[in-house]
Length: 204
Image 1 (spheres, rainbow, N blue to C red):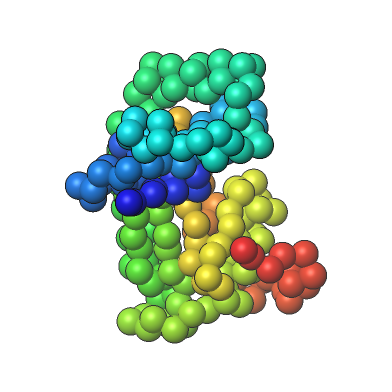
Image 2: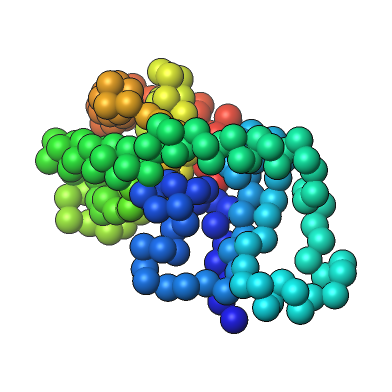
């Protein structure tokens, strides 16, 4: 049995309703949460009928289930994603963001691997051109400067920028965000970001 956790990814982020669909794999169960509730607390398990019907209650019961109000919010969220063509926007804007980082990579040697599908993107910050060595100091300071200047940014694994903007992001907003990131990297490389940032941020 294959259970796919789609909670972190959220519906539509990779240009398909579920991330697993990008890999020609059919899961037996999908676990959904967070964004599925449209901002309200909701979790869901979606799966094959024969599996779900084989469970004796309360085997599949969980805390955030069965609330009619949040279920209505979830249905409305799906409706909005469809109306706004958010899945296609994820692919188009994701390509736009990756292209923006490729340009920054030509400009700054500390940008390493750039990867992702749709609006789920990871960008490694490294010690120098051609290096794969992590650069936690640069990553922490760049993220903090982005936050200071109006862009919410976090990082994972010490030195990977986690780029996951809203599915309805516009090209204008992407360009503004890339400008903030460019400026933050420039500030780091010119020693304009002090070590005091470690008092307020450590990444995730």
